[in-house]
Amino acid sequence: MGLKVLLVVDTLPVAATERLRDIYLAAIKAHVALGYETFVVQSRAPWRQDTADFLAAMGATLVPDGDEPAPRPSLLTLVRDPLYIKPNRMFQRLMHAVTTYFARDGLPDVITGLMSTKYTGVPAFMLSQSLGVPFTIWEHLTHYQRPQLGFTTKRRVRRAQAASDRLFTVSQPLLENIRRCMSLPLPQGRVLPNPILDGFFEPPTTALPEIETFRRGRYLCAGWTNWRDIKRADIFLRAIAKLPEDVCAVIAGPTLKSARRLLEELGLQDRVLMTGSLDRAQIHALAYMTDCCILPSDHETFGMPALEAMAAGKPVVTTVSGGPETLISEPWLGRVVAPRDPAAIAEAVLEIKADPTAFPAEKIRAHTKSTYAETAFSGYWQAHYEELLG
Image (cartoon, rainbow, N blue to C red; front, top):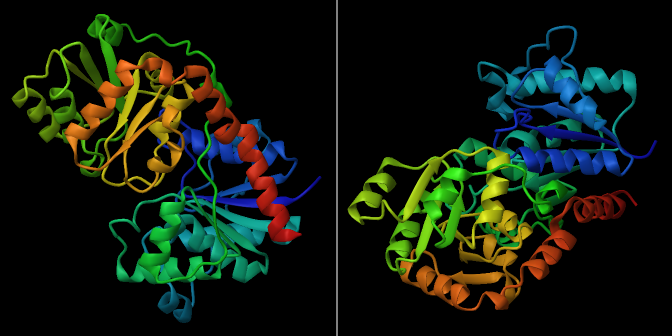
């Protein structure tokens, strides 16, 4: 067997509807496909049999909680890291579980915190110090753009990032934001983009008759995300209001009440369908149904909806928001506009609608598959570990 890797996640998304499920699965599957002994530990969830079975089916092992209760942390530990005194003492449990398990099984060659420095990079750092093995962080959160890190958390995250042997971020803008927000040079910083599962390149098997009925042959724009305030459903709606009557739109995912009120104020009930939350199969189907994906966010670190649309061969209109603009690396992939500008979004949609041959579906899909699909993603991990470990 090859490399032994310990992956730290916050909570493994087992249910098919859970957020970030595909990204976690692709990361774990990539390590297993490369022949690595792959172990996973959760920082914010205890060991469960269904989670262990879920990982075992992929060829990975969920590190069990220790048989004995974790020892109480020392006063020095509490002073250095107050997270130990939280009610669930999650880091205490994690550290005890990992050190107990690998004392019997032999140390991992590398520890990697997936997706969030706050909950995975920090324990990866602490485990690295305790076990004496290198560690990496793969970061995707937007805290560094706004920023939204408290003093204690920022200090903890900064220490972990500065000490990391590799700090991967999902986009170059995110890496630059971290350097600026944390006042760190981070010469070990690299870009490792989010992946998309191979199955997304296949035609969907799920039907969305409600959307097809609503569409009525019109040009369909769509956007899907958790429409928090930074995602700007209001900008999306105002852009649609500036487009002709033969353009309609679907907004999928949880929306704020203010967005529904604006929908009525603009009189767009016949032209915009708000579906609420969709599962992964339905998102897959929507990506293939739409003519153009719109991602109007103020802040993103990558922009998975844009990547999903591209996997379906569809062009994207996105804003300069910290990540998705890097996905639209060629003019035939879509358009990038300034944030908070509904008129610019509407103009970009009209440009794409007027000349669909300038955005060839097969070319978009082929580019996306060669750059972001599971095979490419596995290759990125392999290259990174070879560089790190020699």
